[in-house]
Figure 1 (cartoon, helix red, strand yellow):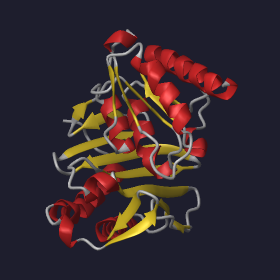
Figure 2 (cartoon, one colour):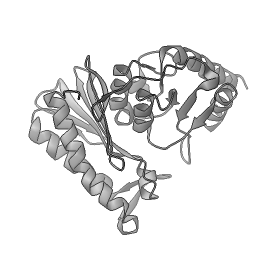
Figure 3 (cartoon, helix red, strand yellow):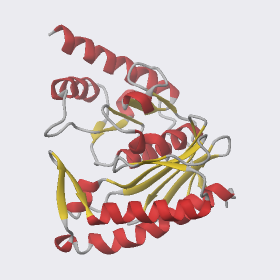
Figure 4 (spheres, one colour):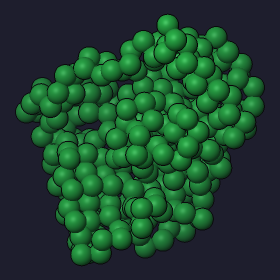
Length: 270
């Protein structure tokens, strides 16, 4: 059994507490008060309640740390070198449709570097976690990214742009390129879990554009600590700044990046 540090224990406990209400609410979707947050993008009372719980629990344990949250809240802490980056409900649209695939994501950023991450999928009680230099784990079991090096055997996860999101043409060209050489593409609707599944070797790779730091911060360190490679779509380590990301083992990452770059050039030239 893997030994968790004090900070990972704090993150795990906060995620578990926030998840209690989510698990109860998904069985009562019709009773949730829902408001429109944007085109095809919703926020529910479950989302905001989970956020309040996470902030309260993390602040109780580390009162000087700041926060960056999915609902756009930025709280400057006394210790400006450390902050929590949290998504209280990644997969909100899944949740509001009664699809049991969503997660709570918590990352700790220290001096502009992600040093710890937790992703909790409460329906199946799967707790993914990692800390810099200590490896990545799922419920105490050590994680490693997939060892596949042949694109024809690989399954890739992604996110598909929807109403109100740009670059539909670019995505279609990217998907066409990946479909032509791989065993398939999956779109599950929660980027944090896509990254966690890459770390666990369930997916061989993942790419998406237009994400936010809270969507990917915890997943980035979990993939890295599982032996994976994570960059932006251009190969730079700018995924938290740009919101564009590729994650895979080192061999598949290079090939996927090449395919996506070529697709982008074809769209620009058309």
